[in-house]
Length: 525
Image (cartoon, rainbow, N blue to C red):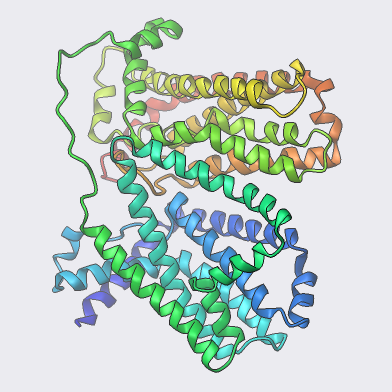
């Protein structure tokens, strides 16, 4: 194998990463690192904390501790790569790699090698090695065997994330795929609750589940680092088998067609369709522009999937957090934390980067008879309209399915916080659009192509309210009491004011930033 070009590609990959550190990757890496550490710490404390882990190791349950921690990191890394797109993005396209003296197989290997050397996977490896060192210090693991097991665990984690991403990518690009994906997500979201109920009825179920999971890669790594002799070699064999099977699946998935063929549109071109009429109901002077942006959003496959998934995801988070809350109205408090995401999550990809997906079409906004700033307002209005529909749907869902006694004040608070998230986050998205944009791929069905501020708004819209409301419920419960419903209304009013002030300021500064935006979305910057 010709290793010299691959070494050059790896070196070039890090040069490109270093060149972009100040603009995006460095900031996002720090943000995601903090997010991963927070999730791991929350999981650790949820299981009893560090002392509980040490006690388990000292009582001969070192392998069980390793299994739990490695499986949690494995799952967290897979979800982070699939949802956020870190560590699996294509660094070099096939046409670029053809310029190097590499065969087809070598080009495929080069793509995967340059992907697995992404700093994200070194972060995951560091977390796993931390466990190995801690177990070795407690005398419960072999240092050399543990390091070897962790080195083998990273490729299997990377390949699994690659396969899952390709499956989701191809599924969502096909007719009805978004519905299938939504059903799969809802089904998976129901597993923890159903499993908890099943464990209460049958205590031996947990043992049988662990026995079945022993054939997974994280459990194989745990066996390799904590056992000796044949048992340790069996764990290494499990990891190698996972790498081989996932590598074959990744190659097969790459050979499948990624997108379905698009059919040519039939019928006359309409300038007064349902989108224009809908826009005209709210913004009569900008009906055509709002209609254009509504089409732009609705025709995107990722938007369709997120539009269908937002309410089930919010309901799942509210239910799960409500069940473990110690507050008297635990489900209601958790629903307050989930409400802000309802109006923003579905359009978040565009709301924080309004022109990043327009490409060369951006120039057309500067040539219209309307003032160029009108396209900023129309794009944001369309995002608000679509988000508002989900806020209303969330309110109806609460009325129909809420497991609490009817209280109008609760509904007012939930709608108010939904309105708060809708306008506050869309207002923040306007500033990110102008001052921290990023060129994106409109046809990409999965992955992360947002800027650092866009990622902060997106993840902050989920974690911020959920954690913030939970903290208030414990330390200032009167703030989330239905008796003080008017405070939520005031918060929503403040968000509306912030949005329209931001819209006015950004519309005024759009012309100042138009050249930078044009260069970026057209790939010249």
